[in-house]
Length: 182
Image (cartoon, rainbow, N blue to C red; front, side):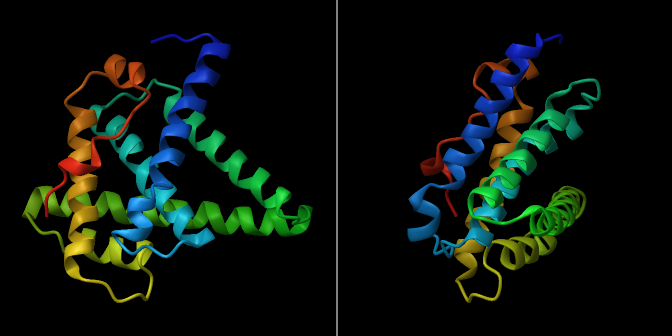
């Protein structure tokens, strides 16, 4: 699929805005007890972007510029936010290295967890990944963690059952959160 540079930029921005909009839902912070911190917001953004990256990975769509452009846009936004918070060049560079490393670690863990679930019907890796990344050291019920696992798997399935063109048309909009039953 070929996009013009301008249309491609608009598409990436819309996809990213869907990720941000969903990641900031009060539902996660109130009903699912995710701490409303910079780190937790970062983790929810990575969690939601993973679903989109996983669609491309599982669909074998290797020639699309969307995943790389979404990654670039996301990290440019992180950098801009750090600068708006008053961090200087040296601090921003150090923090961006930490963010990028954290991103790849989380993506790898979610990917391994999805693979383990599919191959062995074992949610342990996903459970621990959600607990460690979204909840950190906070004690929460396993029901809340299982909600995120089911939500993740449902969205990956939702994207995968649609063609790329349909997902693009809806800007990779996530499933209705009320449809997730744990």
